[in-house]
Length: 409
Image (cartoon, rainbow, N blue to C red; front, side):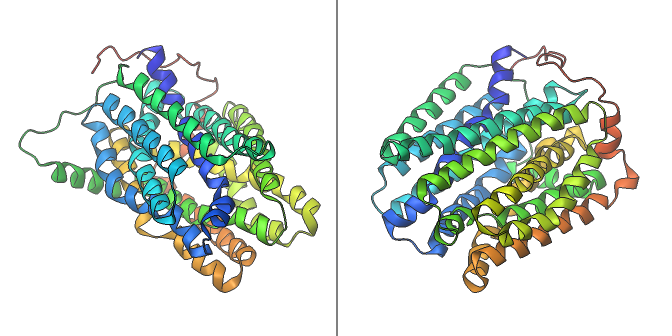
């Protein structure tokens, strides 16, 4: 596989994180500008998930059957359209449409690139994915940082989003002329697309290792939903100004970068499963401790280990789901695309209205982290799992360490 294809695969989620980080941290701004309730703010994030629920199961299953180049470039183009629409939105209705467009593009771009990353480094998939996540986190650092800088300089958020849309369009143009590895399977000419997708989903759910890894990811989605109104809480109840909220998000991404750098070193010497268990165990108590911490200084002190532990879960759990059975990687992505059928973000918004944002965050975070711990142990005796694979990964994979795919699209 060519260097440009590898670079685009590794930076796909970076691009997505820059864009989504920008509109996520703008939630308080959207609330003020458009006069939104907490449920309306939650619906913005939820509509992305609902649209993705319709699009991603099919596009993810097609990763094993269809052109990766078209999936990646088409997804990036949809994100460019979404950010441009957010920049020009004049009402809440148009803002919902713009968020819906984001749900169209994120999955095809990121899911396809995920598989290209782990396929490129078969001897060290966890480390490769952890390094890709490091880049993703750099993108999440850059997005809120860009908004924080713009607000500090009294620059409107609209031209910032428009500039980000232009960057996504450039990524799409580069991907459209890049050769990616071909799909591993050829679609059966006599089978309908729906039948191909259903077959892959059934196979993924039936595989014990894939099923366990997918359950962990579902529990992680529950845990993550605890933080859907985090920036609203920091602004409305903790009393931080909008620029300081954006700065808070930026600092969190800095902590994430440090954590991922240390994770890369850990995976060279110790089992991935041990890191996962330590992080998940800490996350059972850290959200509540963070909410209950006295003052801004106390929340800063506990926010650092919370961000540190939280970022470790995703690359370990995601790499496990993609490598539990290499032939079912696309199907595993398709199953995860069905997770939004459970409206975690909207349910958390309702829960927050009834209980308060802070208490709801603490309760959901504890339940989600505990569920991850339980799910990660189910069925692990039957296969090697990330712990056993990590013992084979004594040396880091180089950026070009995987065998080149000779065939092209």
